Image 1: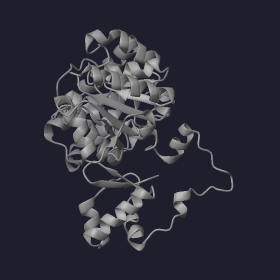
Image 2 (image 1 turned 30 degrees about the vertical axis):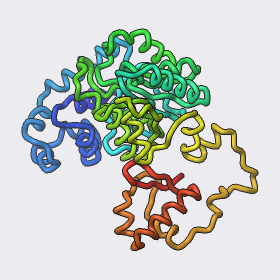
Image 3 (image 1 turned 90 degrees about the vertical axis):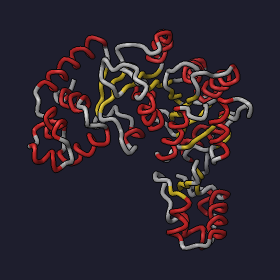
Image 4 (image 1 turned 45 degrees about the horizontal axis):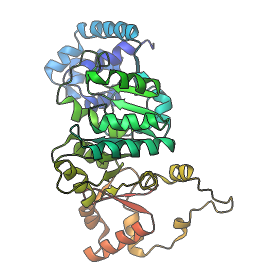
Length: 373
């Protein structure tokens, strides 16, 4: 293992330093070792409180990190930092990526394929289970990696569907990797490790606290090009994952459900709010970035037609103005576009509609828009 691994583990363990703060400190000081060596004044200037600074300067935290390294070696667990080549590039792009990931399996290979997250209710119906298995199996058969959280219900069904399809799957969990949660998924966990990866940002010994699971959802969506919601009640954590996906510029998909079912509220609401309705694997693939979409669908362009057809379509002045305000990575809300583009509301809506029809932009839930790659 790398010589500075104890510093990374220690930084990841300190209370009061979450991923966002850790990344800000790394940008400011350069490395974990330099953060630990920084003066109290420098750390105060960086915005840290006295208790956090005290813990940074306490040698006990590094001793805990050394013990953690010994334990992960005994358990056969790997650890990658945000600076390692094995760290998933897509996850590195989010606003608050984990600075370290504990893992079992082959994360590099699993995350090198296009990844799609499939999430949903723990208290799922037979319809939801069958839908999750079917869609995950079909996507895995097309070469996509299925990402989920290994929870009961839809998550477990998504992993099983991926395995049935002969594909790879990644489980992002909200506990330490030395134990299985829930316990009845021990066999599933081993199958995931053999055909993908088990991932956690939490140190060993972290129990399944309720707050951990919504927190880990940003990693789940961050690894993925898009998130499919299959059954979710009104206050489901799956809706948090969908919201995070939209904020990260990822696609949001939903499988429609029976309007009389409580677990159909989430996906039906998302569809009403702009999520793509999913009935078939092709519904998902058609929304992915063009190079991936064409690779999966087998679309080949002649060598003399390097410029995509839609790039050659002439845009109106309004469409050009709106397109110039959009990027591929940061969604822009319609209110922001209204302020910046200096168009009347009717002209803005016409421009957005035209750009969508010309496949130049896509709409995300919450009336936000992003430029297509």
